[in-house]
Length: 449
Image (cartoon, rainbow, N blue to C red):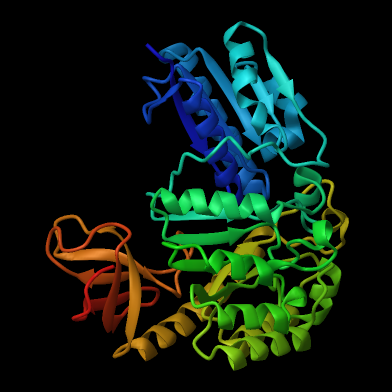
């Protein structure tokens, strides 16, 4: 009987792609999967260490899983991912229950490391951050219900923003060769994937290291040609790298959704300078105008940081005013996290956590009003939705429109009895109601696809 593995994936969607590659390797090697801690012979935690709260969640999860060496049947506990890359020695010293540690660029060794651990040989595998793991033949074991998948087009980052630890955890920017991406995309679509979500630390620079120029537009052209693929969504597009070539590729390719995640991180010019960002208010205004001018229906999502060192009340007000001016369709906000080994951690003017949380709350209160007004403006329109599942005990389904990325944006609740729709169906809906973040819809006469 094969050993059972419980796999816990924490953090971002990019980390999830790494998890899916590891799961495929393990499954192909004969291991089986379980979602029960008590039944697990092996537990693997793919960790995150982007901000303090993520580190705490990763450590707490490892400690919780370690307890099953006493109360369960656990034979091996492995930690992978960003926390392992950053604190491999500390994990091995302070959590002796951990038998194996793999860094962010070492996950392709998951099978031999696990076998060594099961043979009683503790392992630490931290490879240099100058290449890419060998994933070409590994495949993916999807964890996203099968109708959508993330396509990680690059690893690492060269921007070195003053608050960010990612370059030290993930290395410099390294694009995945286009031929490999197209092959992976075709394989995913053959498995039933209808929506591909392009991710990287920064998608807009794709190809610049391999081909000497930005190649995201050409990648979109090639993905658009894949038969059976219906939606292509772009996340993590830095504003300074968005240009007319990319915008025109979004316009000409009918499968590319009029949606973009464009993190700006703040709306005050001095704070943006101190963050090491390469834009200011005027730059961002111009990029938003370019996007909306070419695609009036585009949904622009952004992210901001509240309580950066030295942020005064006026600077915070400048952020609020800029959010009000820009009317972003979607916005996520985070309280600044003072991360060791980053320049900003040593900046003067570190703010109290309560101040940061209060400013975060004000940002989200403002955005909630913007979201509600935008959702109300959609009432009476027809939008295509991809069905995520059935609402329990209700004659309705949960879906997402082109305006909604999984897990971070809203939903549309589509009326329908049992077995009318199935997960992954694309359904034209008439928007009949609005909440702060979600919509209500009725299916039109057009059939599901």
